[in-house]
Amino acid sequence: MNLVIALLSTRQFLSAERIRDSVAGYEESASDEAFSRMFERDKNELRDLGIPLEIGQVSRLSGQEGYRINRDAYELPDIDLTSEEAAAVAVAVQLWESPELAAAADSALLKLRAAGIHVEPDAAQAVVPAVPARTRGSEAALGKLLAAVDAGRAVRFEHRNSHSAPYLMRDVEPWGVVTHRGRWYLVGHDRGRDAVRTFRLSRIGADVTAYGPENAVRKPEGVDLRRIVSDVTGAAPVTGTATVWVADGRGQEIRRLGPAVEDREIAGRMGAVVEVPVRSRDWLARLITGLGADALVLAPAELRDDVVARLHSVLDHTEVPA
Image (tube, rainbow, N blue to C red; front, side, top):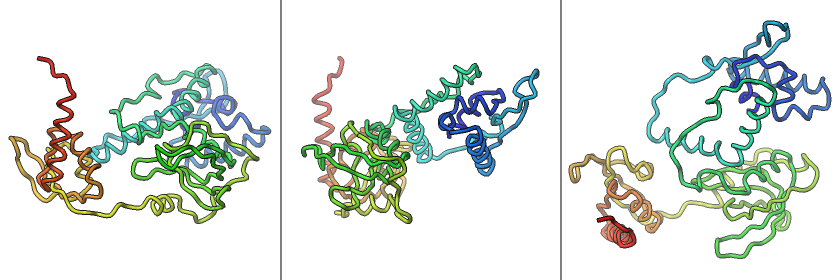
């Protein structure tokens, strides 16, 4: 990833020596031979992935060989995304721009500029709509946990089972960090309890300490981290069905929950009627309330009354200018 960022961020051909000095991961090579092996391995992997790696002279006055990625051949052509696909891409970009990962990208580009390499001004720029904080991976513990997983080291941190419970110290062999239903979870072996455990990152304190030798902790072969998290969190039982109208082009959160059974015009706006399974009436009411005039509960009456009451509460606490 670091090599791709470096080779995409400049139109120049970069020599192997500059890549070794500028790209994170190469500077710790024990010898020139070790770097050469690592660099050859990474170049072959890029080619296997279909990334157009080019070789050319570093400058007109030098016969030294250099490398770059052909941006025109690398970038995708114009594509049309559905609203759901566009939302997924927005979440992915927001994760990359989270404090933990953005710092790595900025550091790589700063090293290139310091080495006198011209970096394309738009190489690290991206503008996407804001997404809910819990999907952005911005929890303070994320960067430290990812670093510990990568290094294969155990970690100690404070964790609480709920937002009202006290923090307890945990000693864990981290196997990986995964997402499930918009939340981040650490999966690993809890040494204190001698069992596999999952920990929601939003309930882990910011003070995560890695300790012990590197490469001492590794995920066991055949272990599916997502399956572990899914089994632990489970799915709430369905207690009924709600019928909700959502305006065209709106309410993608509702549309993902169930099938659209018909198109209908309400108050001069076209939309779709969606059958939504109810697992938590409170959660569904909050979701529909947040959509304002773009969603309307048709049934059941109890859910509609709940949403109307919430909307009245918002109005009562909102100053409306004359």
